[in-house]
Image 1 (cartoon, rainbow over the protein chains, first blue to last red):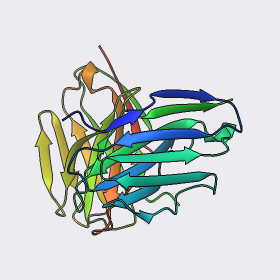
Image 2: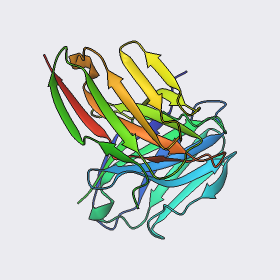
Image 3: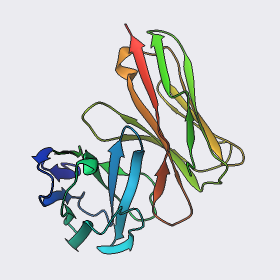
Length: 113
Length: 111
């Protein structure tokens, strides 16, 4: 298994632009999580899905952030419009539901200038 | 509110030394995970502990879950440079499906 695949690995964009991060979870995993990691705040859960349904989006910082999971093998996290304070590493992780251990992707390092 | 506190925040030791890092909370968890993260990569799951008082060993790493399931420790024997990384603990509540992460301990093992 190739693991959790995220793209792009790096993204540099200008303030105000739309950014879309992509994630392919491990086949057969039915829970998917989006986390954001910064030096100041560590790993923060943004949103998670069970069986493609959003369960808890209380960590999404603002309406500028949205996430979708149209099918079991693909999810997106979109920021529109982006701001410099959104700069961080964004991780996608997947797991079998009721299995507390996650498999993380390699992350997308987002820089908004 | 930080639910999981890890200590120390930074640790720098020489190869061959032993060390212990801690993960503490006022909350009871149904399970607790330890991850190691290397620069430029995502966290990698090392172990899950479920039962109060449980001890698990992974080569030179020993993980213990507190009796009350509120805290955990990770002990590394004879540390090696390859152990360098950010060690994160994460706690899960019941079947909620989501875990809360601590801020991590950054370990540097010097050759």
